[in-house]
Length: 367
Image (cartoon, rainbow, N blue to C red; front, side, top):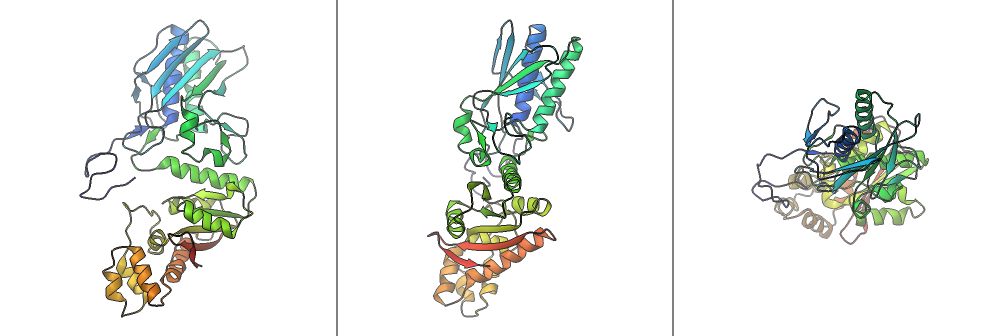
């Protein structure tokens, strides 16, 4: 999801090229709602349709499809996530609106491909469509303004759909968070910043919220499936909601736990990833932090090993060299990584442990 200087990124964007911003599913749903309701009120779909985002920007969105009948109108927008590696890039966001009985107010429904919340701890209560608070507010403001201009009450039903959304949701955390049946409609600013991976970090935060709501005493944050499996073997009674798919975003976990603590954190990862955490890096992606072999040589504290570690090609090679020499380099990395965790958590009442996991999925160090 990042890139190295001198190499072409996997998504085809040349190194050094300016990265395009994109739009959240919430912004697209708001624009589609405005277009559909305008057509229901006036008979015409505005295209492009302009909305106002929370920070005042006023982007225009081209409509992909429209449909107008006597009692309902639909409009859709194809989401452009810019240059961010977003699972919903090019997904079609559809809003269908219809007027309801006087006094019924504004109602949100989950259509095809939009999930329903089934567990407490999320910003939306169980039983509600997985449409987050900011997108709901933006759509409410649009409905109230358009209805007021026509002199009628905002008694409107909005159904948001994402064709193929249930399949796309399999690539997200939604199932683990208890959001069933499809995607969430997300966004706080309406803008997707390239390579911010904001949706992933948002999922980490919601995972912590769900764990806290369930009064869990421990969560596991893992860099990948092998590390998570190793941690779960140590704690086999933990439910799925205790496991946070941290990926490279150690900072996303630790900074949120600092404000929203759980009693105990187990952070598990491979040797290379946790070496970067030991160095003080909170973003463990290879495009944004690198293993410092001089740091590893210093941790090994074995003069005879220093030249070999400094010339090692990979962190695994350095670990193997140390292991062959009887030096517990993984243990030293675990201790220093734990120090980074404690420094980042500050005074938060969170006990922490580190598990260093090798490529065979075995725990090679614990602190």
